[in-house]
Amino acid sequence: MKHLYILSSLLLSALFITSASHGQDEFPVLKGPYLGQTPPGLTARPFAPGIVNTEEWGDAGGFSLDMNEFFVTRWKHSRDAREPESVIFKKVGDQWRKMAVPAGARRPFHAPGGNILYYGAKYKERTADGWSEMKSLGPAFEEIRIMGLSASRKGTLVFDEVGTDGDGVIRYSRLLDGKREEPKPFGKEINTGTWNAHPFIAPDESYIMWDGERESGYGKSDLYISFRQKDGSWGEAINLGDKVNTEAEEGGPQVTPDGKYLFFNRMVTPATDDTDSQSDLYWIDAQIIDDLMPTQ
Image: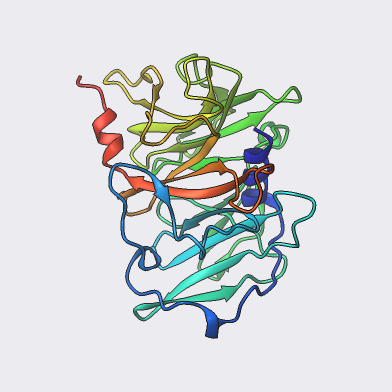
């Protein structure tokens, strides 16, 4: 799981590195939603090959809340790889443009509603004059080694904690009467196996997805989902199945802000090198989530 750890660490806390692999003049014409890509069905496939996914670097990304920007984070998958680029694809009119990422910028997680930006254990709030100074969620959060974090409309945070032995635990914190409660671990329905990380909570808190390693999985880490029960508890973890999971590592699930597609990363072997695996971004119709929901 070291590759996925690097993925999330970069997403939440690393500085973006800017370098141009090709100019805007060489960039292909992309029109329409989702960077002009043909939407997938119920079998996962790579997102924007050669544009988002590259053979040179590990790649990850996600849409802004208004779906008009797509952030791409890249990193070396081997010591021999050259320095990567991290970019933003921005929709201008009906066409997508490739934009340089400002030096020193960090990609935050946008909470539903767009009024809070989370950077691991820190956050900014929208004010009348722009964004506030960086604030802390509190000492209890600062002590946790957070890779992935997600928030619901109610302000519930779900996030992971990676231990020194490589195990992962997923925790949550609710917003009660305007106050942030101390982090608590989920039960065995979610925290089972040797690894649990990169959680995503639905805006309405109807489900949680994450990647985990279990003996019953397809290989290394798989994507799992737990649905909220009528009594407010969380149901047993459900493997997303062979339309998503493989013998390779899958991780970092996230649903697009419009709720239509599930994005995740998969460790793949580059065509030019059969020794070093790297992370590519995949997508699949979010209908797969509804199909997995148990009948209550």
